[in-house]
Image 1: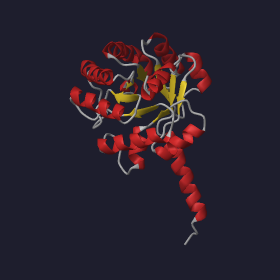
Image 2 (image 1 turned 60 degrees about the horizontal axis):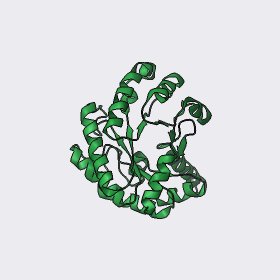
Image 3 (image 1 turned 90 degrees about the horizontal axis):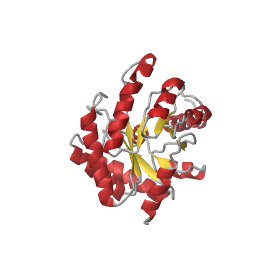
Length: 256
């Protein structure tokens, strides 16, 4: 196997319900080196952090060529598997999503996140449309010969207040089943923080569940007990780093 295939295989094996893979999301080669040195098992980018670090807003405002160049430099900075947040795949047409996946694989990625909402307004795509996009992503990965991990971000729980999340588990499950059939490997459900819906989704989903850390998220121990397979820190590492930088600068720079 090639080194990339070996990393992809290793990354896939890290998704164990009850023993979640923890991803402390990075945004550039320097942050990737720091997280690697901290003992991480894998590296994942976060689109919000990457965009902000390069002077762009999130929502596919950062040019794809720059996203891929940044990915290539991150891959070169670590010996760990690298998964990239590709937002909504950089293209409405499914064929364009497939092309984006090909570019990411060419730059060394072994997995990605793809959202099921529109970057312009956050509205959910029709399930059938998202499945078509996943199928093209899978075909592109298969053509490259890499067991690429397609983690589909399901934004069902982003669309309504927290007190309605339990009522939307069935909707998320319907999407999970369709996405799995289309070729997805994981289901990312940011915004979901309550124990009961997390447990139900982890128990019944055909795809391993990925939770994003927030102030209200259960502890890693609890998430493991619930059967979660992956925990992402999203933009929080970048926010913490920039806050620390700002505080250090205020101490170092004399006041007027």
